[in-house]
Length: 258
Length: 240
Image (cartoon, rainbow over all chains, first blue to last red; front, top):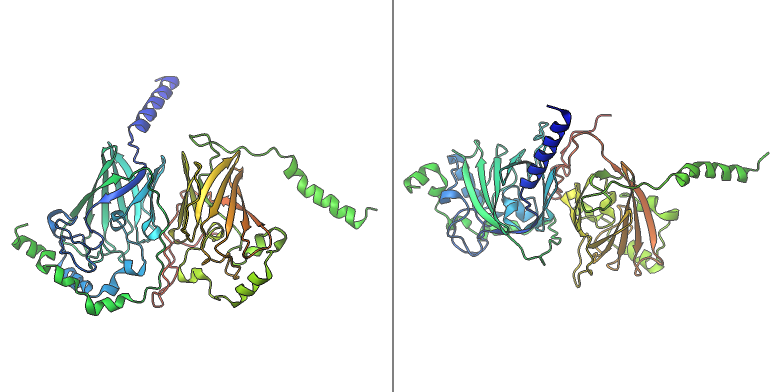
């Protein structure tokens, strides 16, 4: 092929691919009920908000291994173990329960949150670091599959959690997020999570994002370490009363016919 | 034989000469035709320890009562408690800064404590009755320069760890101008009628981090973690 023709084809191809990438810029509000309190269905109550009939986990079950289910039970009644109460970073998908503004360039997608003055940079190139790097929010690498933004999140530490209800993970956590625009104002958010150290199988979470009105602006939220009161919840708040712990195990889930 | 003064003047002229004759740099443009400041940048100075190092004439024009207030005030640098460092200090914290630009926006993503500023460059007035650690930033373009007007700052931050303080009347005007492919000139005018007798200026270069594949990493402040390392080695030490 002659170089000029080749170059013309290249231009057409790059123009076409640039055109076909959806524009996700804007301020987005997650559409879910109280996932920050618990990702599972839960009754309303103090520190579990107004409750949620569905939760965001597919099937309403977290397939914890028995040892991990025991640990969840312990953490539920030891509120001081919740890192977000100490102003620590949420991790993914926990951070996504809060509104954010998305900025999109060819190489990076930035999600800038008000909550916890967090941001995520989703690199559309490169690879996960292989030097032992671990982070609360992990390392995010994105690519487009048609109109869906697929983000692979690795390098997670074992300190971030899924909610305030003791649902934790280990540093084996691997998250794949899929952002699919449904129309101009809605994005479907489907997450697959895999953590062979704590769970018996991969599991899924779903909710969506709705475009915020134009007047919405991300501001500053200062949450700084120094919280000293959380430990006092240990004696008074029993989040375990809001759950049927059988449901946290694969065996229990089977018994429940799920 | 030339006098000592003449010699100094000649030397001064020689050192200024090239900079003055060089044509001003015109930065590449973004898709909306604005100077492109995008990339990962970092200061190379110790201003975060003592800001007077980068102050014009190395003097901070304190009002006597402000100096007295400062002497009687808190003696622990607020960032030791993981508080955000405020503006302009966030710029000269010794950590990388990624700048992203979109039409109507300049976004600053600071590695330090995952702080961020979303700066709108479309005209708007400052917010009312609210203050922030990093203030309220309103940006505008003046030719090659991004000018950011920052108000609504609280009085809880210090300008450095040498306890140079300010009040909630602080007003900062920042100017970002590309000097070349890998340098941004950063200037800030600092005004605070409750603390300083007149506005004063700081200036410093921001250098592009040119290392291939360099990316921001996560820097989480963990004060109060019962003796766990405050800043874990989240990035391997640079090889020299």
